[in-house]
Image: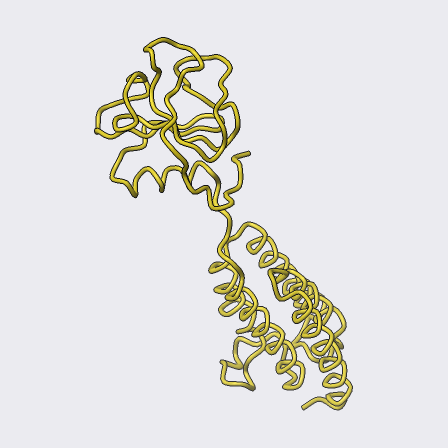
Length: 231
């Protein structure tokens, strides 16, 4: 252990306590807060705790943590966990069951602090609520779950047909033949441009009578499950 390991240990423990406090306060989804605190921890570690080239290794670790933050923000949670476990924690776990040959941080106290923070972050990510999906994906799943087929989607609406081979051009079918699954108010038949009085969260059938107009037949609701509108 290095001569200043007591200082390292004290620094890491203080940062760990602060990070766990933030974790408790922000338990409902703020995993990136913990990422920031791992960054702070790494930035404040003395050069001596690194195997060599402290500036290079510190910057490399910070870049990896920033990549984890981006993965979390993009809702790629399992990829974030894998990167934390296999690409970051493995650089600082030689004294706690890992392979010391892979370590960039070599002081045991620093390793313990950094790994504890990473473990807290992994637990936080695992407890995050399910990521919101785009409404087009939710609508497609709704269509396929009922055994129908997705024909196409456009701004605010997905065309779902009961029989393979049917298309959006078959736009005079009943609710048992064609569904317009709407997630934006006013979205309608992509084959018939115009103004529609449709509402998000509802499903519509074909035109009745069979002419391009605001006359899509109301079929009922669909569960949007708080989906995110497509960009």
